[in-house]
Image (cartoon, rainbow, N blue to C red):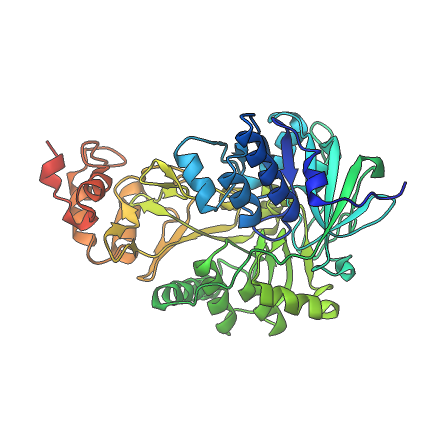
Length: 498
């Protein structure tokens, strides 16, 4: 059966009001661009006629502005899962104009197969190549592509010529069976290949191929500053001390690292520290620092779900495929983020906290407990299962007006039971084996900004008797003071402890 080449506008005609649409990609990497813009245009046209037009959206993780942004501005999204980072979409979520289901990234594919979230009507897939017998080669990410292709009634392929066909072989596509037939996932080291290098679909489901030549939305990372570099150096020094103490094998376990500037700084500082041996990476997002360290021989092999790199770095990878193809694998997110594999390989997991409390609980998602920032992403997939789970954060934000450490987190994503270590620019809080009061003293003394240490020490002394000495009258006083005066440093405990 010959493939049918169509325009983006023709492709959008296959998407109907109330359809559930699955999109390829994971972060801006691997996301379709032309077809989402055409769907957004169609939504605006229907709205101008007075007709409803909205879709449900399944994606791998966050996407680029050409996907989430375009559809958000067109008011075309009925609901969205599992993760996002677009400012226009965030505004809709917090205005409750779009429903959002925040979800651990490793769980989405099986949720879809179980039927928990309804059917998948259409899959829109960015590809580097597609063959007439139905082999699709993903581009810079995999995400949930295999599952949505299998479940969708209709598949639209966006063939992006920016990505060379020669990346075939960089992907390892594997879908586990669903319980009760699932077996162990046979990944024992990051370099193990367990699947095939393409997504195979019945070619009759491909309703059209749209040819494009568009760059990813990904830009360069913000330059590192003193705070992020200090965090990175503290992480590297702590890991060296763990090796010397015998709590981390000298061979060094694989590393998982989240996305963003702090994560990039951590990886860079680990690479610079010669007391850390060359290591492997088993993660979800592969960032610029990873590619740099691979070229320097400091990272031996990397397995992930997406090349979440700047466009200049992506061009460099494509220009040197002979070097990278035997050192890098891209997998579906239910494999890259799988807790079974994380536990088996004994990963060191390093993720970023939005807010932490003095007892070791972590808020990754909500500003002041109410406003969604991005979502939990993959941090929960790794944190509970890792050999060593580390959270990093700058100690303050907004020129010191906001403390990253509060008496009680305003929203709970990771409990104290999963969080082993917290690191800021000021130092390291090793929470393993400590009681709640011990954890509080350790965090205040080592991680909290000096401006907030007296306040949090006073709070701890005010706590009611019990295993965890919270004061329920004052536990959200930092957040209340921020709302009232714009500066948590102005907190007066007597104002709230009545």
